[in-house]
Image 1 (cartoon, rainbow, N blue to C red):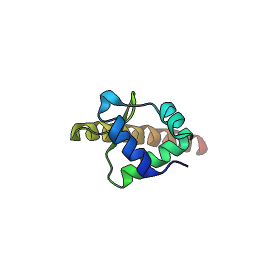
Image 2 (tube, rainbow, N blue to C red):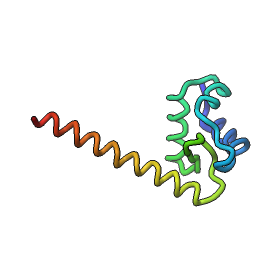
Image 3 (tube, rainbow, N blue to C red):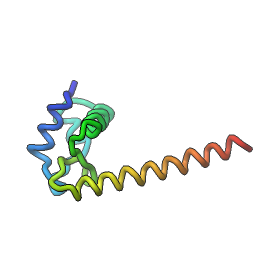
Image 4 (cartoon, rainbow, N blue to C red):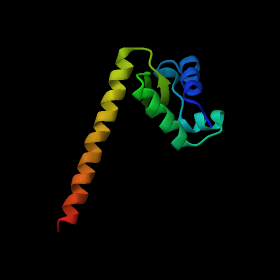
Length: 95
């Protein structure tokens, strides 16, 4: 099982900055795990304040505060989309 520290160190050493981002599928192969485990570890690292970012190019270790700001914006837009989906489903239940 992949350890958080292993993933953090790997991303910091090999995926520093968005230009060096790596897709989950590649990380899964490297760490012999699945996408759920990668996402779980990334989420946990982020909760600890470790600047693991993501973009359409994959996961990477932030090289600047702007990287973190862009990731926060992306996560925030997902919250909005999920909230709208929940609202739509709730409206169905009220029919």
